[in-house]
Image (cartoon, rainbow, N blue to C red; front, side, top):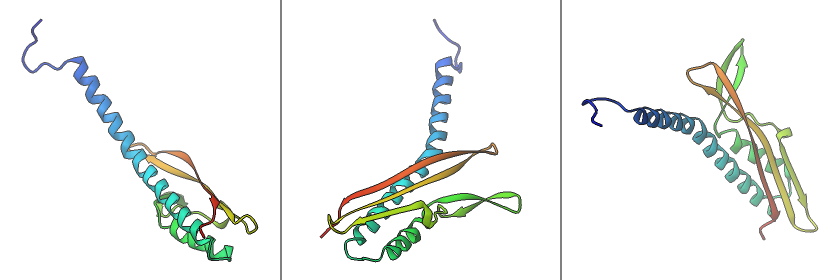
Length: 138
């Protein structure tokens, strides 16, 4: 069956709509995924510091300094939501444990990220878990 020139098929419309949805989802999820990779790298760096630095507060401060330069988070100021640099982590969000006898350690961070859905004024919250455990480097 011949179609008139310039006609658009239903398949083409569905394909273009699907590509738009995939592009929008990538625009939302890829920055979150990349920030989570940065958090994993920061936790690995802090974990490796545990082998030489016995002071847990310095390790926690080092990790929080790196983590609070990653990504953005939303805060409510003066009745409106504003985007602020960093993940907004505190000392309570980071769990650091060390076993000197076994020469092992564990570092765990649970954090949430809120994403604003454009063009809506809706926010979605995503939960992330970063855990690094094992033998400390010699």
